[in-house]
Length: 205
Image (cartoon, rainbow, N blue to C red; front, side, top):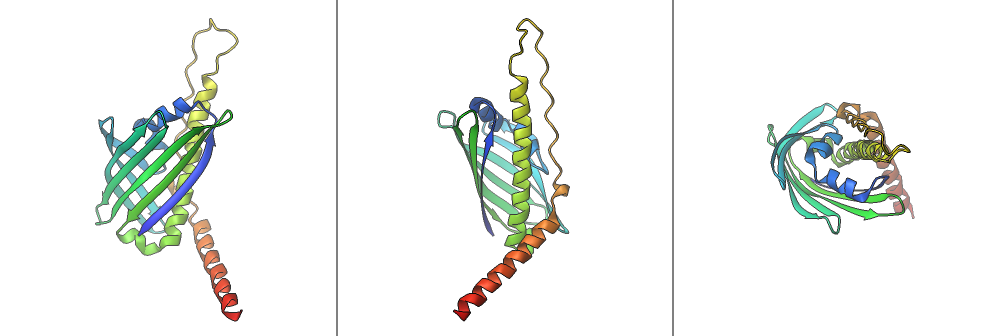
């Protein structure tokens, strides 16, 4: 099952800080609910895992993510993800991130093209897209919390001779168990009802 998602959001932080964050798996991956880094192979590849919970189904995928493009001048990053689940499922796909400097903010556009197999796909495209959308929303929230707090801490104070203050620790990422599955189910059902009436009206016309 192929899933395509796109998210655009703004971050109140210097673009180079956002870029360095994007290039640092140890900082970036923990912001994704249910994800972790187990090994940094080199500056272009790392090994990680992600747990995906959709209703009663929980699947844990382990694999590699490779930076296939890391153009700092254009602030364009493309990552290739390849992972497997113990139950036989697989996930492969690309995640493309482009940063653009705006008026006091950085605009980040993230596009994901992922192909999934295994028991998770049994719940249907609507449920998977709904849960994925909520996970991405929490991911964005965690990124903003981490980078914008750090950016505020980096603003020089009035006393330039004062000893530098430690930056606030990044807030822990929100757990994937907090995904509102009921909201996703309601949306899937509502979309189905709306589409049904659209087809009905179309046939009546």
